[in-house]
Image 1 (tube, rainbow, N blue to C red):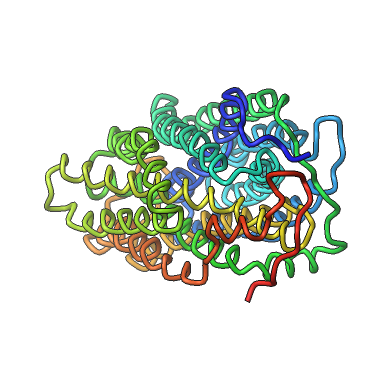
Image 2 (cartoon, rainbow, N blue to C red):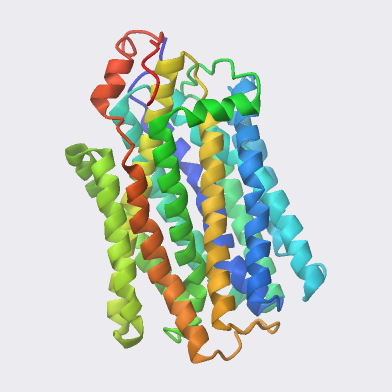
Length: 460
């Protein structure tokens, strides 16, 4: 029997709590790791960009493996839930280790961060991939997936707000420099523990669906994902857009310091304006999606994000209130971009189940999260490259060095024009996406009656 279409409020909330984990890990390294390397450990901007990029790029290989393993897992807790607990707890311990700084400052410290970040990213893969796979098995209802994702993105926005706004404040309260970052690492680790345990316990009464036999090899699994045309288009768009979002995260501290000239309160205010609107407009985006459809709503949200980021290039001549209002516009677009992309992913998985008769959510979410992780790593890498090319000067004092006008221009363009181009242009990659409710229903005519699937036509 299929899992019921209607999920309880407890399951909605329990599943959404996992976004405390994904939100914290997706936000804080992207926000603070690059400045930590350049302005506390004294690593050159170009090298710091590589140290941030390469460990997460490793997850492009690890995430599909994590999906394959979770697909094959059989336990009394289901296929996915064991990883919510074990992967989440491992992630918390390793995250605190990133900022432990056992070698002080300098090249050895930078190398340690790279190794610790790689281990942490691996643990995150074994939490995130099963977590993202769960919606396709929790419900078979098209609209219910959007509601489930709305809860998740609302908590994700809260997690980004708390971790992104409070983490810099913890660094300051802890004395800046190495000591402040150690305290921040412990704070974020505690937040991850709350999310992992909450998601594990909150979904204990949820239907687990059926996890079918996986394809026999990773190569074949990747080939299966590649034959799903809607999935390919959605993934390509989301990876590029994730890189755009990550450039904004990476540039917050630099933008607050070099453009707003407010290194203490600026990052917190920027985060409040970026994430706060997401909490308020989520119900509105849900109604927009119901009226326009998920695809059109995703395009609209992406263009709102891009327009706000592009307008922000005028920040040096705008009053502070104008800057924060534009950041709020970006936040409105970000909320919609996230909720609709993540609501469309389970539709792609359900469509593949209909075509092939195999339920392989872990395969698709493994590829998806690998792409997302790469995009989130690519953003800081691109931003660090912009800083390097514009002549940004690193520091080992915990305080940013005095920068040239060219370096400040690089800080500005990396925070505005670069994410606008990445998020806005990525919607062109959605042109092959043609998965509508009617097409999905046609592919699964018996899905509402029983768990059998029919094999539809291959994607073109």
